[in-house]
Figure 1 (cartoon, rainbow, N blue to C red):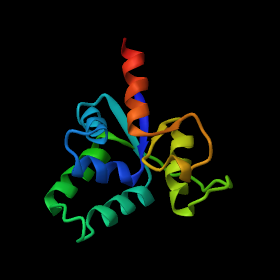
Figure 2 (figure 1 turned 90 degrees about the vertical axis):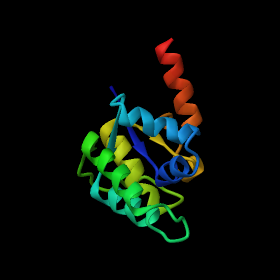
Figure 3 (figure 1 turned 120 degrees about the vertical axis):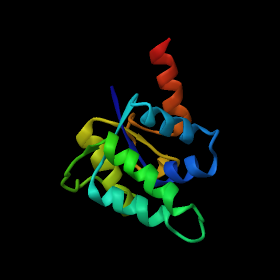
Length: 133
């Protein structure tokens, strides 16, 4: 089963656009077709961002999503890498993906070092469709 690390922007997109690519990825996690990988820093960021008042996501919706991710996923402890990052706050996602040998799914590919596993939600779904044909 494929492992994935989701950048926070993927969760925001999934909650904003229930019929979009990010939401499809969440559905694949909920149906146990993908394993989300995370560390406690990632979960802390998910909660902080998804709970921002300006996003106005219902608290119970945020709680349920995070419970599903943590309940179905793989919690890891990762040491920070020394890879050059354009946005230091994204290091935790990159490092978790490298540690888990997982796809890093993000809407901000330019924030990450060039890596064939750092891809957009649309690119990930294209790869998944090709693998199942």
